[in-house]
Length: 442
Image (tube, rainbow, N blue to C red; front, side, top):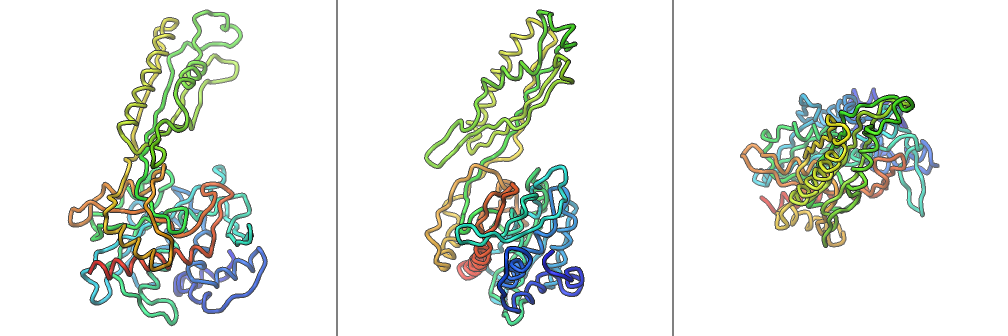
């Protein structure tokens, strides 16, 4: 890691206070290695926090270490932070005096990351500074992802909490309404953290999911997800030499290819807002050996859709294709079957365009001098999909928005990089949103 003595500093005061100390020392020029990273870390506490976070590999299912780091940072601020059974970290910040009546706001991001190397998911992340077209980015050595998705969001939340509480040296507390924090696990794989989060213990109805790819990005519509698995099985199999002459052979891999040729790939339906329905063949497997006639095979498709009706129609079409192919090959082998299993695992989500939170976010953006912020539709899923079906302590359905607090490039790949200057702006934007919600809503 670029900053020595981290463990000792954590034990004394938490990494956010360490970040404040770095920021107060002033900047120095450096190259693309540790000197440049140290310079960037001193530029603003949110950047020091970010560098601390990305130094800890945290692929989905392995978030224990970073969860403890986040927990320690929040507790160092004097907050009663907790970790639940799933590994999510939660905390509450009471409202400033006079702002108790303002709407409570949930700030959330996820702590897990997509690993760059599945064979070595805990491989250390080695950040470096790269210059592209005159702009400095934080990237890696190309062997891992950076994890800025979504440690940028986590860093923003942690540093915003410190500023609201006046914990940075020489900084006064900032006025705010009730703030609740949830840093979740396993967003990149199963959404287990968000799904298991007990939002009925929260007061907030409005939620900012800080997980976008671009600064000032506001997403109000996300696609749901469904998995379709097609499995031809029950074929006789046999030796690819001794049995190859039999006219009644059925090879499950060839059958699967026949089905896949008829199933569409890519965009299936789109409208003026963008892609409505898409399908991707993501996984395929089959056979037992290269010298055996394959008795079974399997292909897994991922469907993304903002229209459940269109999704249902496509699944029906796939079932019809599989049934027709099954009937054809059962004439050769009566026990042969083509099984189709469809599972919707994430509902689509769309926020109301007249949501007060959208209005407050736009007003905060105007104060920041940002261009007119218009909610966009994105053909992907996120924790907003999950939170939109959850309820708070008063039984109200949560109203989330997904926002971007930094400019990221190449997420989920070893080419991932972060525009570090945009992260400072993103943190300030989130603080302005909090201030606007407090002032407009009380």
